[in-house]
Image (tube, chains in turn red, blue):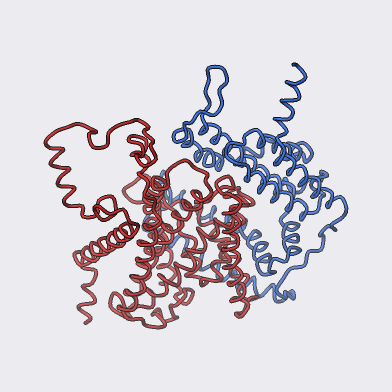
Length: 350
Length: 255
C-alpha cells in the first residue's frame, strides 16, 4: 500500500504532510508528559523488530499463499497509540529512504494511510473498547484471549480498508489515473479485505502469545491478565456501531456515481455522450428465458440495486445503501456467531 | 557502503542535498500529465549526480527492481481510458493516454532515482544531523537513528531464527499456523528485555534525551550555491519549454 511520489499531486502530498505532521506533533507532545527518555529505547527496538518481523512469511493453511503481520495494530497494542504512531512513522521513513518503499514526497500520505488509521482508529475505537469490554464471559483468561483475537482481526480489517480507500481518494484527487474512481475502489477494497483478515489472524496469534507469557506488556491489560477497566457490552457495541456508520456511510457517500470501469468500457456514459464500444445496455448479452427469469429475481431481491434506492439518484441513497450493507453484514456475523456457539460461554456464565 | 564514498557530492552538506532532492521531486511531480517534453529535461539532475558521485545506474535499478514494476503498473490503464488522439506522426496516432502513461512512468523513475541518490551519497548520521538543524523534535531524530541501528540487529536475529526453523521443517514454505504466535512472540519478549538493558546502558553513559553529532559538516558557500543553482535550473526546465525552443530554432535554421 506504499504510494510512490508519481501517484500524488504536490497539493495533495502537502495536505497529507500537514495532517500527518499534526498527528505526529500531538503524539510527541503527549509523550513528553510521559517518561520520554525511558520509552525511547523500547520504541526503537520494537520498531526495528516490527520492521524485520514484517518480512517473515506466515503460511496460510489450505492455500499456497502467505501473510504478514499488521504493524500498526501490534505497535499500538504494545506501546500505546502515541508511541506506536511515532514508531510507525520511523518504520515508514526508513522504508522510504533506504528501501525506496514509498516516495519521499508521498511519505505524509503513507504515514496517514498506514500509521494513523492503524494506531489511532485501531487503538481508540477498536482495541481499547473491545479489550476493556466484558465480551465472551467477563474476567476469565480465555475470555480475554478471545477479546484480543477479535480486536486484532477487526482492527486490521477496518484500518486496512480505511487505508486502501485513502489511497484511492488521494490518487483520484491528484488526477493521476484515468481509471474511474468506482472501478479503482472496487479493485482495492476486496483485495485489502483479504489482506486485512490474514494480517489480523497473524497479529492476533502474536498478541495472544505475548498475553499468555507476559500480559503486562500489552496496553489496557493488567499483570493478572484481566482488563483494567470494564466496559459493558452495550457501550462497546455503541462505539463499534459508530465505527461501522462512519466507515460504511462515509465511504459510500464519497463513492462516485459513475458506472464502473468495465461497464464504462462496454456501454459508455450516456450523460457524458461517450459511447466507447457502443453497446446498448438494455439489449446486451444472450437473450434467453432463464436469463430473463434470473434478472427479474435479482431485481426483486436486491432492494437497493447499484447501491442506491430504486429510482433515486441522490447521494443519500448511496449512503443509506452503505449503512444497510453494513447492517446486513453485521446481522449475518451475529447469526454466524450464534450458529457456531460463540456466545454459549456467556450464557453459561450468566 | 555507498554513502561512505568521498566524491564532491558526498562532501556536500546533507541539508543542501535534502533541500535539492525535495525541490526536485516536487517540481518533477508538478508537470501536467501531457507535458512529456518538459519532463524529459528533468533527467539532467539524476544524470549529473550519477556521473559525479560514482554511483552506477545499474546499482540504482538493481536496488529498485521490486518497487519499479508497481510504479509502472499504475499508468498502464491510461491508454485504455484516454483514447483521444494527441499527436500524429505520419500514419501513427499517439493517444493522450499513451503520453500520460509515459509521463507518469518517467515521473516515478526520476523521483525514485533522486531519493536513491540522496541516500547513496549521505550517511544516516549526517542526515539525522540535518533533520535536527531543520528543528525536527529530538525525540523523532533519536528514534530514527536508534531504530536504524537496531534494524540490522533484529534482521540478523530473525534470519537466524528463520534458518533454524526451516532446517527443522525442510521443504516447508513460511511459518506454519501453529507457530505463528510463538515465533515472533518469543522475540518480542526478548526484545523488551533488551530495551531495558539498552536504556540502563544509555543512562550509565549520561544520555539526556538526544544524541550529539560530532562530525557534522559546516554549511558553507558551496552548499548554498548548490541549492540556488539547482532550484533555478529546475524552475527553468519547468516553466520554459526548452525542447520546444531548441526544436523551433533548429527547424528555423533549416528553412
